[in-house]
Picture (spheres, one colour):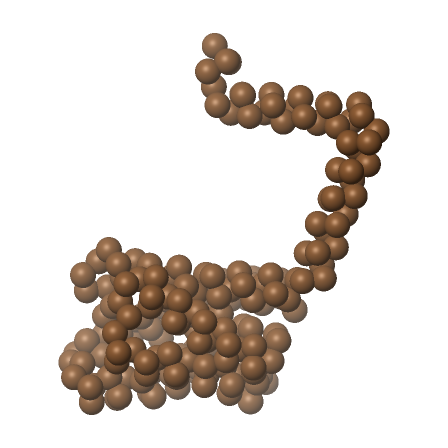
Length: 195
């Protein structure tokens, strides 16, 4: 009965591999050295790992736009969190890069990259540049302030380019509320990891 259970098969194979490694001194030594090397690489490149992780979260956070027709009217995304946290922890150049990479990647992956979105692609890196100027604020205050500043820059420009005022107001409200939630719940966890 256990022979057909995939979990049982994987655990059995892992157990057999571990037994094999522990019985052979050469395999044990190679495994121990590779494990140490892996730990050292993670420690050495910790900053790159966390930058990539946060940018990756920002990129996938807009994937829902691909599947829901009016989803682009709501401000639910993690690009702002990635930008603010990386800028705060690693400096404004890293933050500007994170803003550019996360919003560009998110828009491309969501399939919703339009020429007018260059406003966002240019504005979010600017947020990354100014975050350190407000580093004396609490994390949630900083995140909400950056969200409001970003929206105050991009939304009037989108309206001038033809976006409806109503949809821009909906975006602004949901964007601020969502980022308030992000910067009071999720962001402190990630910030404590990267500092």
